[in-house]
Amino acid sequence: MKIIDLVVLYLQHLAILGRARLTIRAAKYGLRDFTRFLEEMDVFYLSELRAEVVSEYQQELAFRLTSKGTMLAIRSQSQLLAVAKNFTRYLKEEEYLLSDPGVKIQLPRKPRRLPKVILSSTEMRQLMKGPDLRSNNGFRNRIVLEVLYDTGIRRAEMAGIKTRDLDLDGGYIHIRSGKGDKDRVVPLSTRVSDLVRSYLLSVRPAFIQGKDHGYLILNRWGERMNAHGIWAIVKRCSVQAGIKKNISTHTFRHTCATHMMKHGAPVRHVQELLGHESLESTQIYTKVTINDLKEVHARCHPGERL
Picture 1: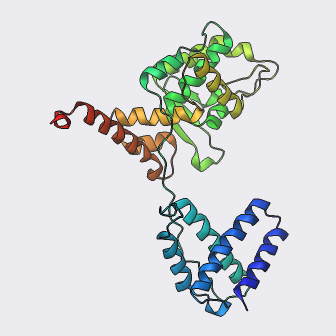
Picture 2: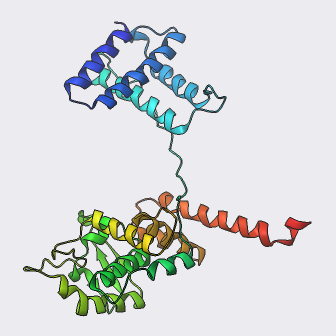
Picture 3: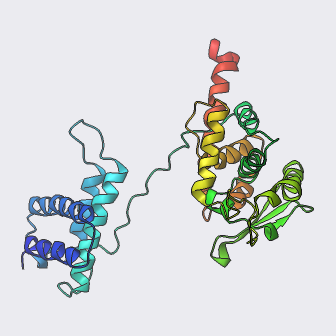
């Protein structure tokens, strides 16, 4: 049976499953590339599709040059290989093949990008001064900024904090992930604990309307502030503070981790704080600090001026 005929059946299969139009289009493009390679290898029939051929395709992608003379991006390699692997898996599952020739192919790892925006300590202090502590909204917004920076938690985690999750005497917050085995406890500084305590005593009660569901951050209707609301507070406060950088809630996470690493925090401790499953996710911040060190070295080391 010709491979090209099975490609048509596979695309019809995706349509029957209700896959998105863009998904089917990406599969069509990827399989056009795959079958073009197979034809160059004189592989036209299903009986000729072996693991060695799929491995050759992976190698060809790894050394392929674009029209601009640059190497094919890892992301593009990964997308094309994923399409080929999904196709060979389909052939095995539908019993066109006895075994899957693409099962051992590992997708190339996508490079981890450095965070685009990280605030300096001066910018962070400037940002914290934005909310007006004389108003209830301002005090609440300041609590959001302080806790995000102090703990590096995500905006959804911030929205999910309940008052019962706080241990202000001990200086801890129990972060609930929604999956019990991924819950974690993060430290809260004494200064921020005191601010939160003042908020709980003097400000939060003013937001409560009717039944209190126990969430730390409340909106104007006394209900839980959702993740988008947390994001909106951060954007509003950055504009008030006159900071030109494109700040988001994740900027606080990046900034918290980077500042801790710069001041000597072990990478394992930062991993625990951020709730990263893999140390690899946390090590991106070591690259940020190394880049910083290189800039300082270039500016200050006398050897640079010899």
